[in-house]
Length: 292
Picture 1: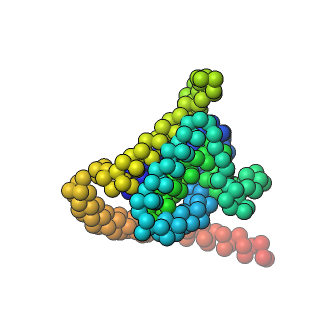
Picture 2: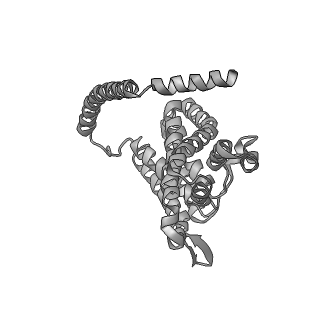
Picture 3: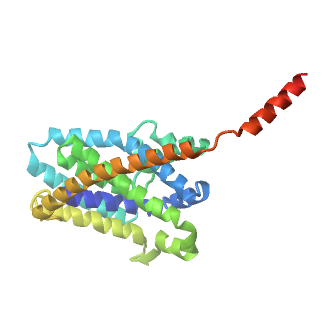
């Protein structure tokens, strides 16, 4: 599962950097949102739209995988072949649009163009998760891995991590978009290559090699069962213990901080000077003179 999560996150990042114009998203965020404080809020809304659009596909993949969970050997073989095939398609610069799987997904870019503010960011997130020929093989590979898990929760988790792989680099790029400059923009877009009478793109090649590698590893390790843990079990237990201790300390610190803030606000209100008697009497005298 850990290898699948890493693959899903890297797949989301490569989908963001795909040559189909997905890299325009950081420019959009940097130009229309601007302030860093607003960027975090819009990124959250973007991620919500992205995950909401991907959720039906994740549910379908998880349900389909659970149906064939009893035929593990066949599922492993089919999954590995699909991953390798999608990787080759991605490396060759081919693709397909996953938006065709959902009836109204093809109109998402039009809805995003007509909206403004938060509504536009939400629609843009939903469209970015599905629309795009270049990102089709990557998303198809993540869905294939999700189906191979044979569990709806695991499938939705993979799709959520795939979305995080798009949003986290998007926020970083948007925050530093102006500082990167034109040269950095060109490097992020990758470059085209001419080899064997074909046009290749560096980002597509990297994504294709990643998917092919995962497909081969999936086949050899019987569905990633034989892959060693990226984080050893004893380290995981140690981290869980530290997280629990940190959570307890955080609760204590939060209570103390709230108490300090509340007492400070109360003290400031106590110190706030009220209206002076002379000023009150003077205002009353003026109002009485005006009434007279």
